[in-house]
Image (cartoon, rainbow, N blue to C red):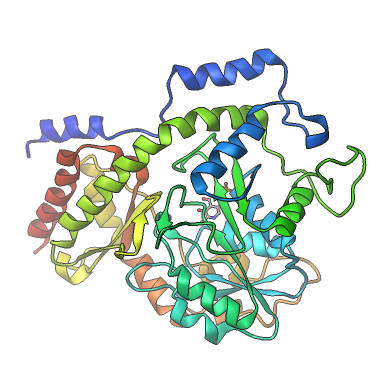
Length: 407
Ligand SMILES: Cc1ncc(COP(=O)(O)O)c(C=O)c1O
């Protein structure tokens, strides 16, 4: 393809976030109303926070939905509501954004890292049981890029060992696995509405669950230990302030209206792009099994075999794609490599000596799959999947050209 056409395509790759007059009006209406605060049930102030909870809950098919400040806090709230705390071990994938593990640290528990699956890049459920000790209390699977973890198997393991499950669904708005929306497989599901996510208000989060007692605990924890229906200045248990700002809730409501069409488009382009890329020798896309009904597609991870591209490095791969107008994202480094875990720069007074990371235990050899995936993969951002079929074809064509040039 001629350079001029590439430029044209580059201009056309969609941007994120996307907004229109309806979003601007929703935010400006809140400003003009003077009701800038969602309040508590006893002092119901802004409407948007409460309505967004209903609307998002309806989409996610959960009995209870609580909007909150962000996706990191959503995990902290979930773990705290499930009574996970001091000295408890919580198993999570070694590959995720740091928030998955730092939220565990925030509750004074200890994250235990599990290697990932070579095809889905999600937590490898076959390796969870070997990490369970008498201190293990919960599993936090992460649906990377919205691609469902093997939740039926993970729930079986949790039931067998009496563990709680918090699904970090920060990437999984709208994902469905074996007929059930993600976030409803475990005890609690958590979402992020940070700026790059498929549903966003810049910052924001959500916690969903289906159990009455867990719902009560979640509400109290995120609203200063209050109880719904009770006196505003009575605080029954320890809690903090994780309430969503009303301005964010207003924006989330108008963004939510646009979500179904965007989600549909990503679920058309995602499998299409995977099929055309998987045909290229040396390229493997994240696996989407037949049990996946819908995928959030927050990111689209792609793994390459350097030998099939003349020994190319990840940086060179990125550079080539970017030079041809194709946006890319870096994927998450495995967390055992991060300074805070490697050098145990964590919380005062907590015993991390049983963790399977830190110092010599942070050696790459203990997480061979995650290290291989990180070294030989990149991601496309979700907004790329809002593009046209010719734009998807252009990605495959560009990678084929790269291969020809390198071999
Ligand atoms: C897997 C995962 N969990 C949790 C979070 C934290 O969400 P937030 O940035 O809204 O705090 C993120 C954010 O990118 C994430 O990717």
